[in-house]
Length: 234
Image (cartoon, rainbow, N blue to C red):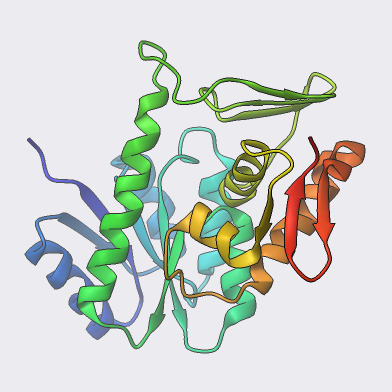
């Protein structure tokens, strides 16, 4: 069995070498580039199984790279783990809104980095259960004019497709699978990203705002339960 290919995009040589060394030691095949432009070319030439992407890059920055990859149907399913500077929470939220799957804050523990990469790849592998020749992992959810098709990773409002980021989609599906149930922000984070996800619960509010805006009137199905969290109307 071939080893998973990880593309490392990092302009600082010492960090690039540290990330590449530890990934290779953990059993991954590694390709490393320095700029955002090189990253897009590398993905086109040899699509990786995952991208470790620094946000602060010369020329095209990491957020732009993330946005380009997630908007392209050919690359939108490639998981992205962001490398961010300590305290850059605004960039973390922007990256997650663009569809990034996780992030690692510098300086970081190599063991934590490997654990994050492994967790993201496991989630991506679980998504392969949606292949057409297999049974869907969840039924189609239809609530009024909103339709969610987990097998196709598709959301429709009044029959028209809605363009959601990967994180927005997971938040919507998490709530819609249990209509009427109230979830705290932490429960939503844990349900979408796994336990001990190191980001403030405020990020959930950002995702909800984005969802409501994109869903239009259907976004009213996501209710705020003051002092508790959110629920999807039954």
